[in-house]
Amino acid sequence: MTYCLSIAGFDPTAGAGVLADFETFYTLSIQARAVVTAVTAQNQRRVLSIEALSPRCIKEQLDALLLEGRPAAVKVGMLATAAVAREVACLLGRLGDVPVVLDPVLRASSGRALLEPRGIPVLRKTLLPLATVITPNRREAEKLLGRKIRGRPGLIRAAKDLLNLGPQAAVITGGDARGALVDVLADARGVKILEGKRIRTGMVRGTGCRYSSALAVYLAKGRSIREAARRAQEYIRRYLAST
Image (cartoon, rainbow, N blue to C red; front, side, top):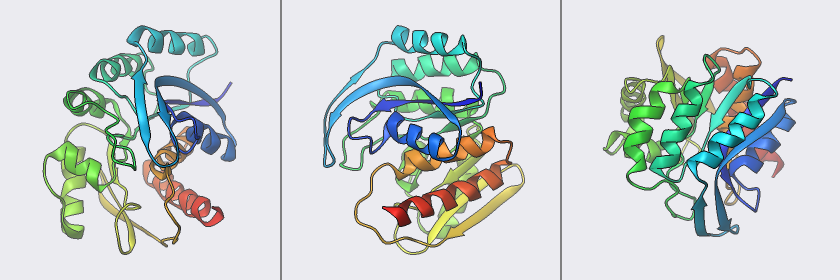
């Protein structure tokens, strides 16, 4: 069975997390499976509480799924704690050359932290080198690099610096920024600017989750990283136009 795997948190509104990933996987015609890392109590406006699952529970979820075969691609989202981040790194090490899209989810749209501070060094040093592609937005990229990013030259430099942390490619997404929609991709070939048409909507949650899970689907279907990133950007544009 061919499936994509989401390793992420549970959002009861389905606005983000594994349920948003499942919606994306099924929309793009691929089977979905999930390893839940944390359960949140939240509504459309704010996160009230977060409870991380134990590393043992997370491992056992993957063990059960691997009895059905390896995933064609993995999307990693919310990790919540350093312990969970370390366990997920161990799990990814078991999957061999399966493409991994890492969305470094650090904070909810409402501002609530979704990864404890001591988890950020684990994310940076342990998980980034295991990723095929990382997909931070500007604020997440700033947190990972420890500096402000200003203008397009700053985005290009930041994407290159993220690449030096170990992933095969880094895409700084521009959906949360003002002005023209620009995603900046850095890989071994250099830097690619992916410009798109910005769709004016109200507050829409979970676009980062959906972008990274769409990118994972296209990698599972054999697309190159650059083509997968372009198609994922187009998918988000269609999604926003339909909301």
